[in-house]
Amino acid sequence: MKHYEGVFSSVRKNGEIYFRASLTYRRKHISLGSYKCPEAAHAAYSEGLRLLNSPRTALDEYTEESPLPFEKWVSLINFRDNGIYFGNPIYMGQKLFYYYLSPTHVLKFDLDDLFYYSSHKIMCRGSHYFAADYGLQVSIASRYGIKPYAREGKDFRFINNDPTDFRRENLEILNLYHGVSRERQKNGQYLYTVRIHIRGNYIVGRYPSEWEAAIAYNKAIDILKKNGVTRHYIPNYIEGLSPSRYADIYTKVTVSPKITDYRPPTSPNNR
Image (cartoon, rainbow, N blue to C red; front, side, top):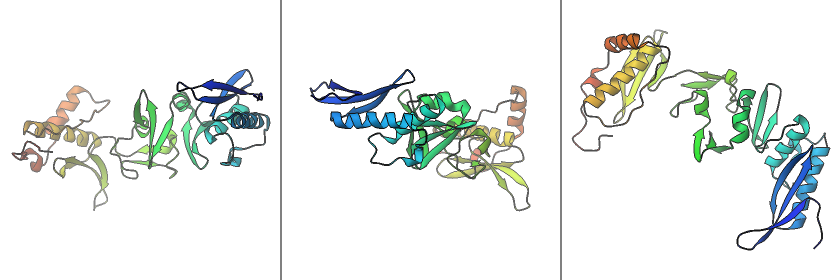
């Protein structure tokens, strides 16, 4: 069999022969993937060398005809330009880095997040992004204080209107707590409206401060549980509030009679 530089044959458990391509650059051994034939593996090897030794080749020059997947293009070009190799499709910029999901789908992050995303692969489902973490899919948004139920524009917003820019300076959390939303009233003033879902949405009340609203939500949970509602609710944790201050607000805050008087239907399913 003809010898191809950078190509090594291997055998799968079922006896099938396949070919691995790899190269060494700046003392770094880089795997380029597995291929069905030695010619394809060698083409990947040659392409990898070309990228590493062609400083003018840019990421936007990638085509589907390339023998290398786009993710590998990103890794190799970043290694060439920045001297750091990542297994994930990351390209370093000034004061930020780019994570390429595709040639046209790029996420931006702070350098502080580099360690995490260099070892956690990002996946996309619709407009939601997840990272594989110990076998689980963890929402990227949750890393930045965005709750699972949060709505863009109402509970949080991207300051520069770019929903792919996850730099912390670009994220503004508008509503920190479960069930709480800041709403402008007809008189122009802002109040915090609290809603809780039982069998439909119920308004718990409207409050002048976010803390009062968050605590009112917790109080509504306690009342509903006492009244026999078995639905699972996540209470709000209010950071920076002393236990005595919390208890004082909890005692004084009022809750709608629709909550205090609510009784679940006799059916065992009260969700």
